[in-house]
Image (cartoon, rainbow, N blue to C red; front, side):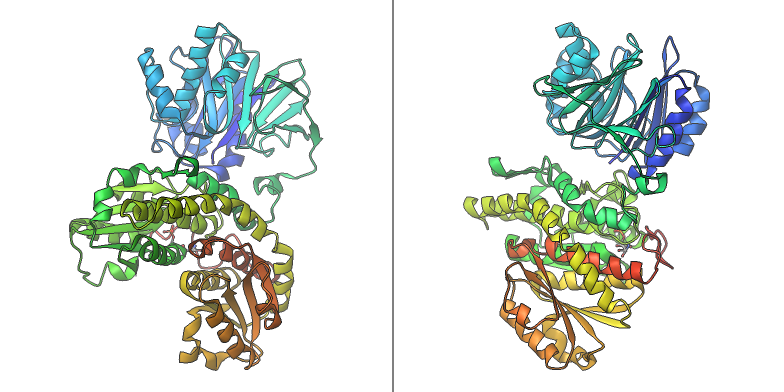
Length: 614
Ligand code: AGP
């Protein structure tokens, strides 16, 4: 995710753009830039770092002008540095663009433009897009708006863009597909932004572009709205916003954590976008493709991580061994790095980290590399220390995760690891083409099934009300959902401060069952796939000791409904994909209990978002 801001009107653009970027930093904060048209030329400044760094660097340029655009970046293509920051010029220097999204087919477009004499300074897909627009302008002899429309009909991906031409500085052209874009409509002035927070103090009137819509914004004129595909006229629906600033940064949610829980359908889709090509029956992952022998010839895969990322690693262990038949060991990075582990050059080490800065995980990677292992990083922050230290990797495209409690990082990590396991299973001949295709098409349904699982939110809130004052809580799961039980317990512990433990359901009889009484709520993951009958027996053991049972079941379940005190349903899916759905009600349960206990949900006591200390 990135943040985009634009202004055209009667005020000085620079302060509006900069302040707007500061309000959008929650969307991305690894680099930032601004471009202002001063009446004769475009003055552009951009830098790796935060908007505050940009403010300091931009002192070098003239900040005068009433037309400007700005961008705060969450890198997806090209590491965070000055040259990859937005805005980007076209080769002529006449056009300048900002972009939030991913152009999937940018490489083929870039090759074609290079063959036509274009050169590129950055590694970004965005610089390709602005030069494609310029090329269309030249070859078709059309104005900016038409050139943008023609160009966007040639790209595949997601975008929210703003672009202007210094030859025609009385307009800005915007377009949207998959990423948000709002137009603030003022008195003889217009604002553009990823959400309304940059302009809410100037106007409450906003137009939210729909997917595949574009607009030509000209001073003194009505917004000219068009459908990108066929140039059909669209009519702007001007909304009068009632929100306040604080709410808008959270997208209308009370907390970043809840916002990020609800972002998971999009985050999972963005993570497999361009990689999962079900209709072609392929999974495309450059980091794996270029090192496939390392994986298929590996003695084993060692997974190192901490916290929630470690739980994602445990899910991966089940997936890799069950589907790809590759031995896997999952290690706490903090233990692995100190226990003098046996590592050889026949080992592949997968490091999982949302922040990409966790000290113990970074240290574990360095140790493994010293001993000859091949290191593959799964991170959410492009250009982070762990990403740079790894030999290869695959990013989760979850966008910034602001809430300290990891939610969308967990499900997008599992998505990446599932893609890798499926790719290796096919490569090793463990999967027939039909079985491979079955998994690919089912994985494509997961975002909508997560959406459906989120619909249990109101029911989960009523369950939270019943158990919010519990002193302890037990989470049980089997197979693929044992790690989900651990993750659910961690979520509850870290944001509501209730002591909770996750356990393999079968382990109950080896001790923990002594804890069961009517004061002990037990969350049991009892989906149809995965030792269902055995879990039902565990539930009966708990019930006979008066334990309170909250069961996560497959929709339509009747047997567990007879036994449990509360039942929360999730859609049916393949057993190996159930963690992507069973974790949703557990995230919501911990969230609502924490809110009811007046805990600081986004910044729990004693915690930090990234543990860069040992
Ligand atoms: C999870 O909710 C916690 N915030 C914490 O356990 C976190 O997962 C852990 O610190 C690892 O962080 P990383 O993924 O950034 O390496």
